[in-house]
Amino acid sequence: MTESETPAFVSSPIVVTPVERGERPFRVVQINGETAGIARDMVDVLRLAHAAGMHHVDLDDPAMVRWVGGGKYKWHT
Image 1 (cartoon, helix red, strand yellow):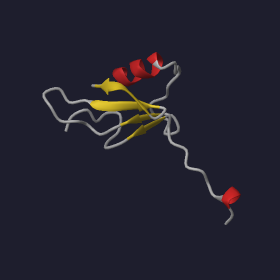
Image 2: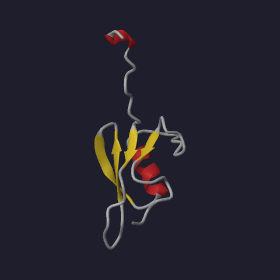
Image 3: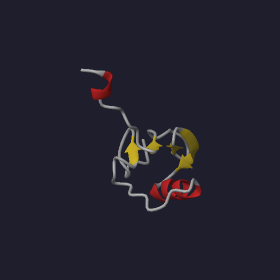
Image 4: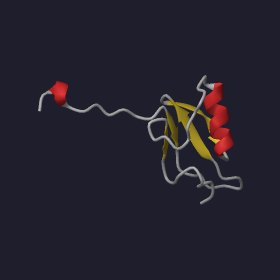
């Protein structure tokens, strides 16, 4: 396989990390490789995406959002 035939890995522009334990559990949200903030629910993920200039974010589209350590309904450990 030549280099031109090697499939390129493309990451989703939004990555939501696993739940962090604490009094108020949260998940870190990264947008385009940069930490955008923390989210305590799906609305926070959308708020951070909109603040970064992203609109029409489909939380179910793996090409748009990668959920690490649980899906969009996982907000507690």
